[in-house]
Length: 111
Image: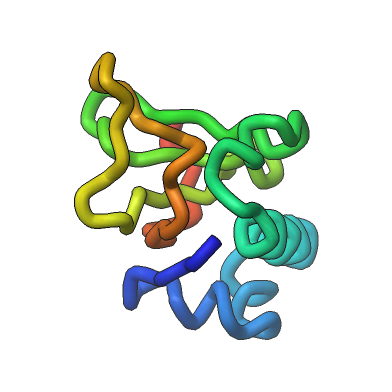
């Protein structure tokens, strides 16, 4: 899958030292693992099959965003970058057709 980055998170995602400084060693390691999982996935549907990632769509003020787990309670938040976002005839996201995402942030949104 193709991955783009929001400018505010690019440095953390592309620089291990910066990731460790901002997130700590364990979360930085998990961030890199999740980014590799996402890069290696043919589509977003693959991520749904990896139970350790718990890839899911968000609700409420975060509708249109998705998340994968890092170390609880932190999540890697992203959005579909395909334009337009692929949808099923029923209107839901077509996970199997998503080939491009944009990483937005690492956050604990339950705080």
